[in-house]
Length: 196
Image (cartoon, rainbow, N blue to C red; front, side, top):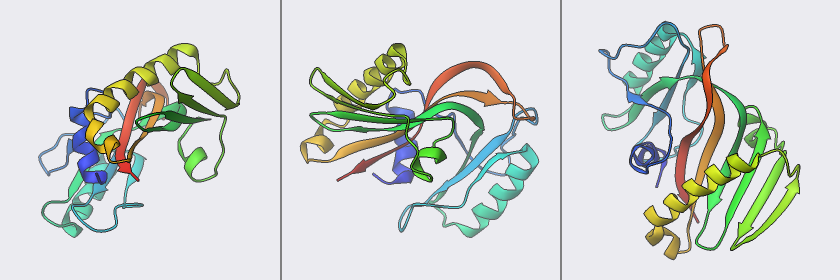
């Protein structure tokens, strides 16, 4: 499963995911919030693709138009409201275990700077914590694990092949135009892929 398939799969998986919309020139973007524009390709290298994060509706439309002109017909340009992360992480779900890594604020702190507040390895009923055991609240861990159960059911065949499902997530707020949080904090998944 590549990034393109992952965006469609997020919509079908029954987990809370970014409310993305495929970009076309008729798409209306709310001027009162900031936007993220991402791309996904049908084939070829699909890591570190062009994107804009936390931009105005006008900037998002301009960037999306230029991106759409450069990509192939079946590639995807998508937009969704920018969010402010309180904590973020990755979750690797395999047939016999779940590994959760988490960091304060944005996921870039983990994937770019290799900062980590906690790693939790769950196998059967055993939990191994490395780092701050209180960083992820019990209710948050319970919520993450409930969705890992859905993922295990949905991707059972992939896991039987010895592969894992990898997800990126945040507990976040939607952002207004001034990068101030709006509404309630909520869990959101924004990438899913299979890994060997």
